[in-house]
Image 1 (spheres, rainbow, N blue to C red):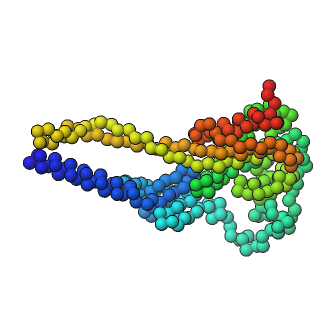
Image 2: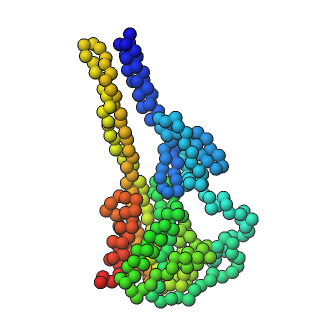
Length: 299
């Protein structure tokens, strides 16, 4: 009797394992979060505030807030983007006529007929622009990441103030406030002429950095021997079992673009890929190029 039970258990285990392998081959939805992570799962429910999903081979229902999602690539080929800033903006001004081509850099709430406020140019002053981070897989760029990277870059320049003297770095609050008034942000800063940026910010030097990247996911599998099934004398004995654990390792493959302008002239332009593939390795590449640019004085 015990032999029949154990044989039945072994057959059911094989069927369950085969069924799990079949499910793993199913097409999954891709939830692309605003922090650039991607969740591959089956979406079971969507609402205006949350999305429910199940991970492969799991019955547990997970919940994620819509405000944390940038985009969803559905298994059927359809896509849906989530723009919180657009949804929270009033539609009252949307019916108004758009700015003319001669005035492309107006803030949304500004009078389209008012001229852009130009600042007097402060000599030997350098402004750090927002840093667009573009995922080459999803084509998604995050405002939060652009501002965080801009802050990290500002800190790097500030820490090396003695090496870039007599240049001084414009405060980020001033930079971002002036850009916002002109209707410029991380998504369109690359489309704005350098001369216009310098007049808006009132500086004679600009640092323009851009990052493109993709994420490589690798699985690390660890097998723990908890037990085994032994066949001896035509009998099946179950002494113990084994278990397998899988951990996901993410490698960030960056390509960094680093430009410095002085009085609208590009005086330095370099492209570099970080040596390491960690999430913050992009900053190592930036510091490497900073130490080799013409405004950096080794002391």
